[in-house]
Image 1: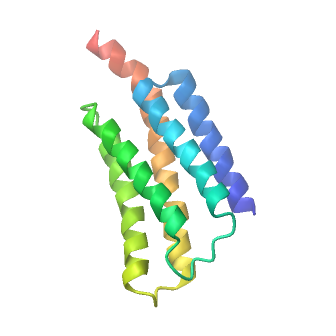
Image 2: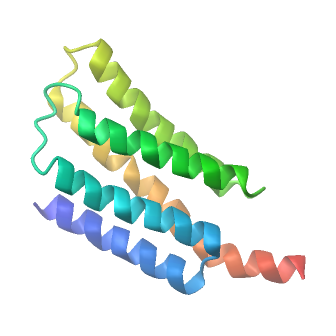
Length: 137
C-alpha cells in the first residue's frame, strides 16, 4: 500500500513540475504517465501477476505509442530514453507470456518500478526545458 502511495506522490510531483516548468512535450509525457497510471489502477485494481496482465499490457503498449510519438516530434534525447524504458516494460509482459515459470514478484516489480526512471527523466526534462529555450534564442 505504501509503495502505491509513494508512486502516486512521485507521479503527481512529475505532473506538477511538467505543468509549471515543462514545454508541451514534457506536459504530454507527464499526462500520459498520469492517465496510464489511473487507467491501470481502474482496469486492474488487484493484479495477481501469475499470468500476463493483459489489461496492463494494453495500457503499456498505448503508453509506448504515446512516448514514441513524442520522440518523433523532437530532437531532444529524453523522449528516446523514456520510450526505451517503456519498451523494457513491454518486453517484461512478452517474457511472462512466453515463459509462464517467471515468478509473479519479479514480473510485478519490473512492471511497476520501470516507471520511476521514466518519471524522473520527465522531471529532469521539464526542469531543463526553459534552459533549452534560452540557449536557442
